[in-house]
Length: 287
Image (cartoon, rainbow, N blue to C red; front, side):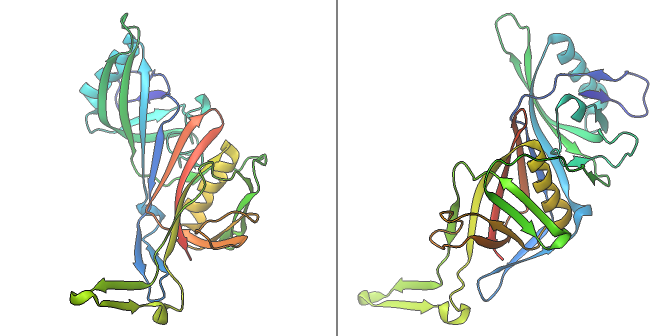
């Protein structure tokens, strides 16, 4: 990737090694959740213009690049805006593969702030490389979504939504399965003398217990791009459907082939784990 100091001729753009695989992007969306009387979750979304993006990186740099990187940060970059470019072209997707800059001439250029720089020292006795951990915070701009690519099927799970006529097929089953959490509508407490007092909210909620589940989707770049685009630009706090064959239990023992859900978290985390492989952490609730 290439770093540039905007509006300055003090230092020409210079390249630094891309972060190691495993860098993690966090997309924060301004959702406000409330639990309804029937146990379901409702969400209010302030809008995509209030989203924020950051990425945690770890990179090994030779001594020359290491010195350039820290000179840039120390002299020009302490809380000041920098420009990072030539990311996608070199296989680095700082704010997920679905997000492009709004700069039509340079969609692979982002305005950033460097944060949390942490020099971990040389990685070997000969000091041929130095590990640096750092965060990049995206200075907000009107982002655009990347073009969809031809995706190859990796599994039998699917995501769909009526908004935007979204249909994403061939999604891999989460390698670690689903982690459901079901809150039953019964409150009990033991009184003096051993008597038990119970309130059964099922009468008011008609058996609709609050249910949520977390899981990690592993996907190739094309499928990951489509999922992130759908969630960030179209679905957001709205309802979408997860479809899976018999034997998939998204909410514990509830058996069905389709689950109507909505996001149950204000954060969407995406990790680039290796070439053409991304992990997307999701937490969903019954819609």
